[in-house]
Image (tube, rainbow, N blue to C red; front, side, top):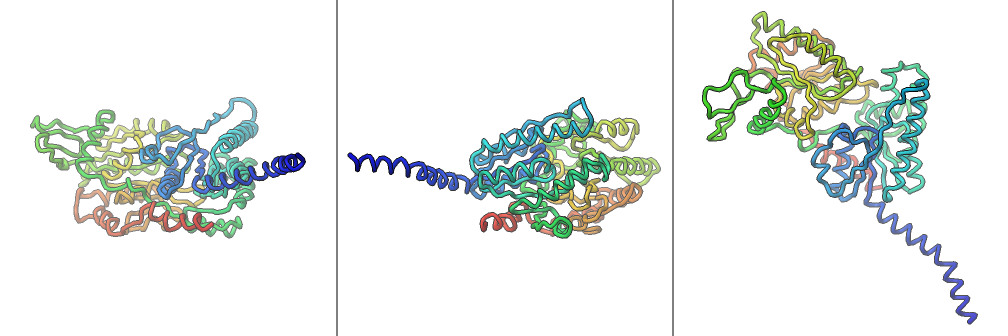
Length: 464
């Protein structure tokens, strides 16, 4: 009897530690193949974090992607069984109290909400976090990592405080607090990635943070669009946007025509329409760091040149994106009454955007960078589609745009206007600069995102 009691007592004493060991081993095994990807912003407008999720899933990880679900992500991500999108709630700015109080309430709410969402996820080996926005996400993700044994990976796209400085000024209290927080908490990560060599050097010299440069690369769906698919896209967009519709109806009822292409209904053969307009695309976030007035002024000069008899085509200018200044500039556009330029500002479905870039003749990028250390993802996408670019100059743009090789760099409205005139004179000219840039992009044989990720990021997380 005594022996039985002793055995029972020994079992009771040893069982909890044994269960704890078993639970930890089960948890570690589960966590090893699970990754949390966190965006304290719109998932649909965070392509780089979508690409991280897809590359992780392709290597056998299960992925929980947390962020705001304001716009639709790419179908490839939605259809992947290894990726679960977890919606975060976005608190809108309060209408009462001083600005710093409103901001404080928002930060506290986001911190508590993100902590709750993360703690209810299954164990993860890594937490991949986009910065910015990093307040309060860096501290929350670090804390969860400490509790759950997850390693924090910060992907530095820019500095959050520098973006806040565009609105409040560099010496504002909120900006100074954000900089202090970002610099302090940024050192808590296990691994740091960044988008340019210039940012890597700045993180090392001024922040004491060692990072690995992972340049943005185009995803596989950014490529030149076949002519039949271009026609389908133009016809689809033409239902909503007049700029894509044919200027004149074809006399032959067996021909279907858009502003750029025509299709023989019986044979299905698609050809480019003679005398077609040039298609220019600019993807913008309609914010202070993208001076849209530069493009608008260049278009005015282009219109004047056409009226004066220059050998230039009519122009369809498509400006995609969402942002706070969109309505303001849309009103300015409507007041111009262009005769040879049509401007439309659609918000495209995720699947249509790559098709549009792959169908365009020229891209224009107005991104300047609040820190001068990040590169525009929109240019990466354009280059994936072999689309030449005119981009506004800033500090580290040379890491992406090679002037006179894959595009042109400008500093002001006059320079952009001169570049548009040069590129579109005698359009479409197979021997012109525009086609030379396109050939150079063809021959450059760029690495795609996934192949680049496999070479740079995968070894970092496999070896740790």
